[in-house]
Length: 361
Image (cartoon, rainbow, N blue to C red; front, side, top):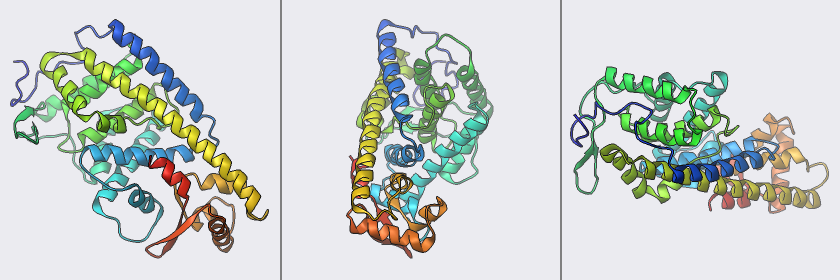
């Protein structure tokens, strides 16, 4: 039986698709998206401390990806909670921070063993949801239109069936074939969302998988390309095109959508990295001009750009200064208008205001 919205789609076709996916439009868009991604990879390599990119950009992805699921927090709440070890944190912010942890966990696992597996997917969703849930075993899962209440998609049912589809997905991810990796990315993302292997957290796990796949195939060295912001801005198209693949096998519009997402996001991220680098160089010069020689160091200024908020313990952990000296350094930086202090629980945090404003654009 083919696709029927309110029945489990246990006949979901395996990958690769039988349909023609190497159309002229797709191949042209693949070239421009690949060029943008290569430019992003190149500009990222010019940042001496990769933590400057990973911490800030990864948190922004965590926020945007969670926002797609209506889990909402603010940049300030997120950055403050990531830095502070004391003080209350609201449930939404905690869940966004778990997404960040899950993405980093997946990236670390990939560096140790460069394969994307069902077990890794399970580990990621367990971190996101902070539970021990595994593959869906019970029937009754359905995707419902929130406005009309109508069932628009019922994913496959039965743990064995779901694992069979995930095994095919794994084989497709690692197959030595002639498909361009960016085309494969679109196919992989669709298939994971169509399998819908978990009771909750499928969207966020699938978006983490996007980033990990790009790292696995060498198109990125660090997990710094995040498509969630693009999806938020084109949310209706995202769900509409997913459904059209399912209902009518319309692969080309979906693949073009994903290639557009990669290209636009790569270009936006490249501009952001260039802005961060320029701001960091300006801040170094400002600090060199205004701070006493005993305070200024390149390492200290780079530390201020790892994330918008910093605290004395970070300076101590980096081996730059003792606790008392670190506190003096931060006060000097605040006096010169580079940082702004605030309390979070029992801690004093210092905000790099210009970096915060840049990341909030």
